[in-house]
Structures are given as structure tokens and as C-alpha cells.
Length: 354
Image (tube, rainbow, N blue to C red):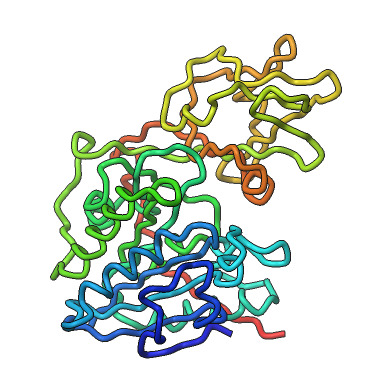
């Protein structure tokens, strides 16, 4: 069950993500009152190996330790158990940033049920905004992610960075579920320990807490660098891979992680493929359709891209690749292309009890 408490547990402000389970044994929603009553929903540690969100929350709460918060905060602490092991998730757990399900709930696990009930609860509140804080495992810039292209969403995100990604998949992510309730954004704050990313995110959260309203001024293509997620690249479970030239079914070029947010021209060889492997990667578009052969081919044992591609979230960490993906593929996006985005109705979350 998601615990609910109305004050910070003793020791919270100085506790590391690794040791947080000693004072918060499981997922917890902490309600903290502020001067403005429309609360900011702040989620951290949805992935247990991404502690920047916890550090940012601690920074903010230390800053206002002797005075009233400028705005009420609903602080959601996510996967505490995985954080104790320094892992994204435990093997018997779902991804905590894929469980915020919209529409009919057909999952029967306790956490899916609890999250659905939490969304019901949040839908009844006058939420001001939602911020979900993450780290990257690969080399990436600091950027925000939005699920709608309306002015409030874009203005909120660009308070953090003018670089942003618009995406509608994968499903079940926190920011997408909350996008139906209030302006929402996901912050990608660089690698774990990136002090500049921590400072940027802390300043951003403080700005949002002190806003009376989120600006609704029109945002132009000259104001931001906007990208759209086209597809996700996965590696089949039975296919081995390496990044250092060691023997494997796929031997990626060394330094591939530096290609994040770089345009890769057509005909670039990004990996060497062994003779035995005919389908080394799987590329799925936003509808879950296999579009591998539209974007890549194997030419003389080399994996070559057929179109200009821009990857994001490329990582070298095998455990992350197996649990999630190798990377996402993006295109540069013009705001006018998404003029209909954000006009959908609020969903109805249905809780199905066992």
C-alpha cells in the first residue's frame, strides 16, 4: 500500500536514497502545507537508481525548513526498495514509471491498484503542476519532457531547459497520466551525481513553487529546441552485445553514447553483426509496430541506418538495456505539427479489484 503521511519523517532531509528504506519502508505520499493551497505534485525515485529527485526535494525542504512553503507540496517517494539496492527496479517489480495507467486498469498487482486509486484521488484536487525528476544513464543534455504541446506545458518545461522532448509513448508514465490533470513535465537531470543538474532542478522546483500562475504565452519554434520521440530501439533477449569490441552478437562502435542528441547521417555503421544473427535489434514506433527495416539494414555485417536519426538516452549499462531499451529515436519537431495535441478529454481511471 502507498503510505500517506502529513509531515517529514525524522532524518528524511539528510538520508541517502540507499538508506531511505530505514525511515520510509515503501512508496509514500507526503502532504506538506504551503501558503498557496493548489499543490505541486513532485515525484522522485520512480527509478531506484536515479537519486537526483530525492536530493532536489531535500534541498527545497531544507531551504524552507524555518519558514512556510510558498505552495503546498504532494511529495511522492517511489521505488524505495529498489533504491536500497541501487537498481532501477527489482526483478520481481514492474517499472515504477510504467504503472500510471490510463483508462481501464487490467493489472492486478498491488502497486498497479494503488497507483490507480492515487490517480482517482489526484483527479479530485486542484493540482497546480506535476514534476517528475529523473537521471540518465548515458551522456545527455539536461532537458524536459512533455506530453502535450499547449503553452502552459511548454512554458513550464522551458523554465528548466529550452531543450525538450514531446512524446506519447511509452504508456503508463507518470507525466502522461498527470498531463490530464494539470501541466506536467519530466526533468532529465543528467547522470547520477551531476551537480549542475541538481542545481538546475532545485532552482526550477523553487521557481514553480513561487509562481502564482504558469504562463500561457505562446511559445514559438525560435524559443525552444523541440524533439519528438519516433521509436524505441530494443535488443532481443537472446542477442548478446558489447560496447568495447569484445565478442558478441552485436559489437557497437566505441563511443556510441556520445551520439545522444546528435544527428546521425544515413549510411553510418553503428555496429558489427555476427553471421548467426538476422534480427539484432527491434525498433518499435509509437503504435508498437515493428519498423526496424524502415530505419536500419545489415550491409556486409554492419548495422547501418537508412535515414537521418537522432538518438536519446543511449546507455552502455546492460541491466538498463535489458530492463528498458537501448535508446529512443527522435526527430526535430515544429510546434505547429502538434497543434491538436493536448485537446483530449480527461480519462476515467477504473479500479478493478481482485
